Amino acid sequence: CTKNGCIDMEHFKVIKTHQIEDEKERQAKKLYYKYALMATHPLLNQTVTRMQRIAEGRKDELFALYSAHDVTLSPVLSALGITEARFPRFAARLVFELWQNLSRSKEHFIRILYNGDDITFQTSFCREHDRRSGRLLCPLAKFIHFVRREMFA
Image (cartoon, rainbow, N blue to C red; front, side):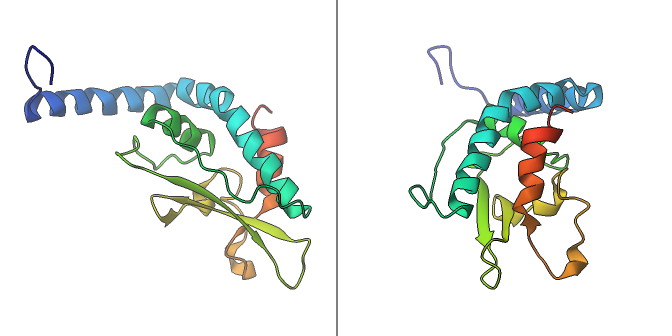
C-alpha cells in the first residue's frame, strides 16, 4: 500500500497478465535467453568452481547460500535451459547438489532441484543424458562443460 491506496486483486491480475505476456515475447525472440546467459555466467561459473574444488577433495567450503529476487532467479533458470519454468513464485528456491559415487571416488554428479522438484534432466546440458544407465544424476563433467564451453558457443 501507498498513500494513494492499495492495489486490489483486479490490479494484480492485470499486472500478472502483462508479466506473462512479456515473458512469452522474450522467449519467442530469444533475447531473454541471451541476456540470461551473460547475466548468470559469473554465478554459474562460481558454482562450478566450488563443486570442482570439493570434488578434488578441498572441503573448505561445503555449503553456499544465496538469496535473490525473482528477477535474478528467472535468468538462471533460463540459462540452464529450463523452458517449462514460469516466473519464480514467492520464496522459490533453486538447489545445486554435488554427489559422489562411493565406489568410484573420482566420479561426481549433480542434481538440480527447483522448489523441491528434480529438474536435472530438464536442463539443456543434461536433457539427453541416458537415464536408463541406472544413474539418476547428471555427471558433473556435463555441467562443467556447459558453463565453461557451451554457454557462449
